[in-house]
Image (cartoon, rainbow, N blue to C red):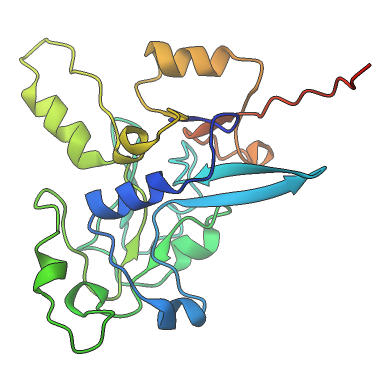
Length: 227
């Protein structure tokens, strides 16, 4: 995944699309007030020299992921496609992976958010009906994170005939982005290969050596002063 911060306008459409696609529960203002969060994708805002910039931050899917070796039950694993996966039925909620993640992109299910309503005694039918049947509904006590919409990746892989190159995958966040700031594909796809050759290309906290697969293109700034 490559994200062009020069195109990002901070609209948060990617956050809402991710929430709808991946059955991410709405936890309500009370949980937010005590410091809990349940978005798989956040948009950081920066202000410099009077101008604002935005940076969407999903899971980095690191090649040398610091969350993987510290999990006592191997719930955080690497697959053959290079994805950093979370095996929910293994997770016992130690939260060591969250503590070891320098990007702070993991979210813990403190309560049974999926089976309760943020509107108090309101019926839950409207909540359960909007769930994506292709994505599991997580229970209390497990760690959640961005999966690069692995259900879409697997659907494309299964649809391809033997020996055929799978069709391009479009993640929910990339599909919803109005400025097409988010690009997704294999490392040799034109979009990703081109982004990695761009002189603006960088990876978040690259000095840590985690080798994240999610990378960025820096913002352009016109420093010319008018005559």
